[in-house]
Image (cartoon, rainbow, N blue to C red; front, side, top):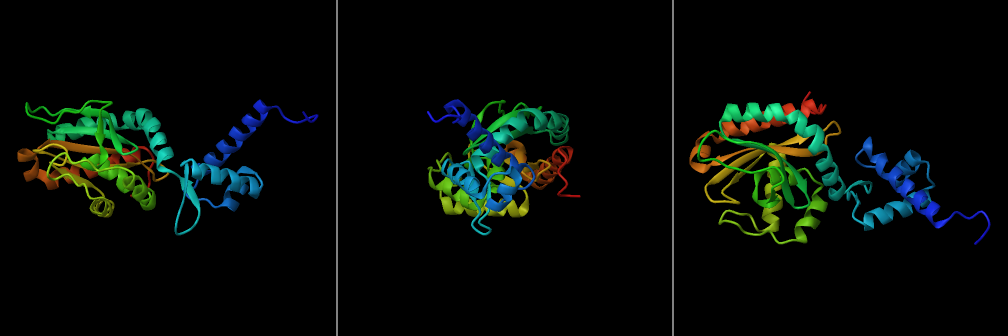
Length: 261
């Protein structure tokens, strides 16, 4: 061994420290170029480029097609959303979920995204005997539920296309969207209108609406939804849309999102 050369363990720690510094640089900005990252981390451009290339290959960073800058991938944002939602979002949303249930008299849910699945992290059940029941920790297919549509709609489109292209959109009812192109168009519409509707797409006779929840960086970290039997839900659909959107805005503002100010 050459005298003064770092030990393997020291090299590993140095690499981990550099990778962490690159990832931390995205806390203040969503898109960064190699020069931006080099300045933020204090690393040489050549080193920064190698690290970024490795992180892209591992699926932790993605490159924006328009600006050619880099941002955190869906995998990383999903993980951060799960961690945040299990603490801050759930705590902030709890009283609002209770109010939403009392206002609409239907079941309400709080959910986060894990890959192409939605994970329920909190619920308030309807007082009606016939109602929608989900439990915290339950996993649902994102393409067949309103919360999943909302959470996917705000991801980067080229990354989303890649994810959808790698999996089969399973059919659960006649209304489930299984065509990837049609599903992407549906997500574009969701993002345009600011909410998602699911009518019997996971289970016949069950409808739901969902709205996004943003954190202080403008990243979607969760979704709030209202769900119930179609015969009760459909006549009041417009009311439920307004209620879900308003609840999502309240929770977002409590998380210091300022996009609506």
